Length: 198
Image (cartoon, rainbow, N blue to C red; front, top):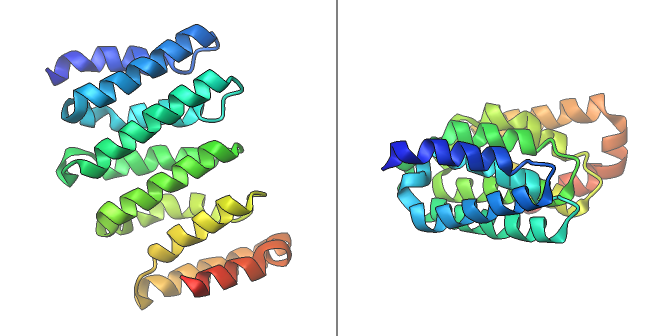
């Protein structure tokens, strides 16, 4: 049952950040198996599991990155197919917010892909909690990777589907440009062009 899963998931999540390669790899492989077979029973823990997986996507070891990538794809697919009521959006967004501050591009890209998937699945629920994730998304605009910036702008644009949402978004952006001249000079044109396209 679900209750029996809690201690196991906790142990696996703990070991998935182990410094020991074998422990980490084993934990990630098991998490992947749990996601694939546990399915609905795993839903209450998806934020914890997501946290564990995203952190390993930028690991130096190929095997660990690969295991994390497979677990990430499985978890995302599970959530995509699940009923909305089965997971807590705010805990997921909270986990994603932390990883959107990552300095590692693979982790950042995966976190942004999650934001895209959740917007696609349930834009109204994400929008209700947008304040929770906006600061992190705006921070990503300064990232050195153009791919990160493009995905980021696309997510922000999706979060501003109407005028009432778009106003605050543009205001926030202008405030950011005023505060960070370097961002305006380096990324200003790309950001504005991309926003207009979306």
